Length: 224
Image (cartoon, rainbow, N blue to C red; front, side, top):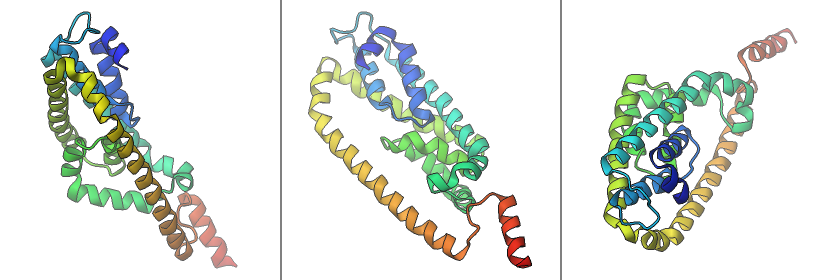
């Protein structure tokens, strides 16, 4: 990633940040910080150092574009997608209804402060789309949160300058520990979801089926 950023500069930064904001965590935090370090002009690998202000602006633009794409995927493809693959990803329409009600009450702080949590931040936009948060609120809080986040990361990279690689190496083991904890948390949530869905479907045998199949199944039961 560092070689790509040093070679392609702003274009590489925009692409990496955009992909991460869509919902594919590819290390946008490291990319933004390293771009800030390149802007300091102290890294021997930087042939033509970047400008700190431009780094922040490009990162925020990538975050915004990617976030809108991720939001659109959740907003316009969420319910049809649940109809097709919901049982495979442990989602039902009842989950989407709960998410929509939750975002109506607490969507703003989630979108704003969720941008400051590594790994989780990649899924904020998709969740907001699934919860059908209004696009105006989503864009407003996304811009604010991403501007603060990108500014802090780029500023840290800029202040580290030539010390960037040394500091990153020191934090690499901590990163592995955090990643392992994240994986364990995801596994725990999956097991919990399986338990919840089994309980719900035991009481509602047609839960999670498309509307037509639910109606047909209920009609067959009544006729029987």
